[in-house]
Image (tube, rainbow, N blue to C red; front, side, top):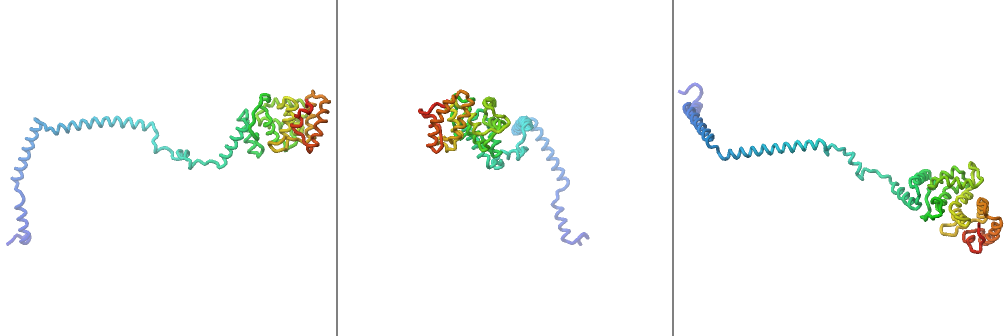
Length: 309
């Protein structure tokens, strides 16, 4: 009969597994053999170390030295990075300010700067900053800016750079009023970079009240005395400024206007004789009547015409 633990199959399996397991004595003998082998190996290595262990030790020492150098380099690099702002911390909005896609340029700015540059080159102001203030003030108010029609050369006899072109600027700015006062003249006078003392000096030659309005054509004639060296040159400048003829044509004036200005300047000068004035009248008046009431520089500069002074 089989044991009570199970059937025949269970008993046979337990018996077979028991036969495969080593005995206690075999296990103990294996342990003693392994222990003796390990002792012999340790003694042998102590007397004659293997070559591969030496190379391993050298390799480890080299790695330690490299690691030390790398640590020094890493520490110095970290110090530099602490002083320099890392790229990832820079504000991207600041970088975007230099991008052409984000900078908004006013559409009319190029045209304004181009017109300003051309005006400055054509006018050649002696004081560019003062002239620029007057220029942009006039542009902002919708007034005529202090700009010459064309480039001109300053003669040696000009009073502190005053030319016919600058007086033409004043004419364009003030002729629409017909009458002006001295404070208005001073404002525009500074706009063309002229010193106020010259305006005050020439104004004192007249008996005009500083507070009252003066006819503009007479003011122009008075200012032309600063440009011309004599009466002929002065009247030539008057014709160039007050003429209504197109640019390039003969600067004619109406006879009545021309004669009133000539008589006024002769009185202010005080050196023109009455007989000279009558001779000029007798010669120029018929020429004006023959030319539809117009008189110009070619008429009084004619060699047959009596001298105006």
